[in-house]
Image (cartoon, rainbow, N blue to C red; front, top):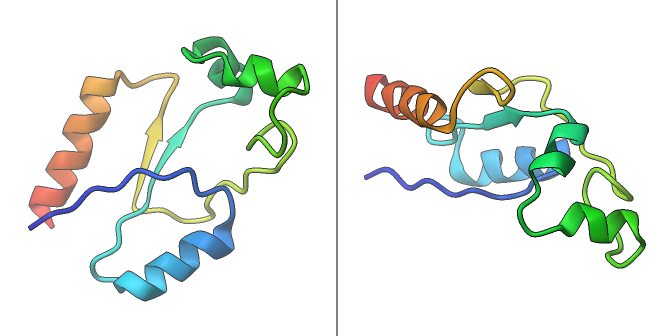
Length: 97
């Protein structure tokens, strides 16, 4: 069985804690690397706009830092890969494992 969970995990310490809880052999970190400017441009809910206007506090990437992973099992270039290609790469990686 494969369970895929998607979380905003801005701090390396949080990701390390979950890796320790789940176990290194079962944990796969996928980093979707997209510049903050592109995240703002793509934002369908307007959350970045609200955060920049001061309507949302402690918003990751605006008021609260995001620590990019030093090492991850899969890195997706969000500027170069389509969502479909990225999903295919993740599924292939999991099946090969």
